[in-house]
Image (tube, rainbow, N blue to C red; front, side, top):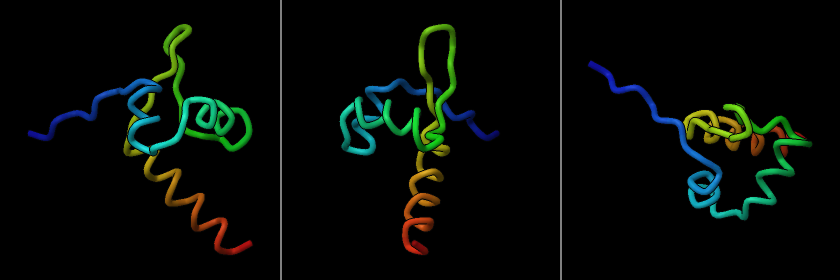
Length: 63
């Protein structure tokens, strides 16, 4: 049986990508970064974050 991916918070994403939280907030506002609201909280799936990073780097290569 496959285990379901856990939701993580901003701190986890910040550590995962090695960027500060303000960078993540800016990406959410300006670059369609994959974030989900749970009330006032932001939650993330690291698989979606990793896919966004891969897509963003691919997009930048074509510019």
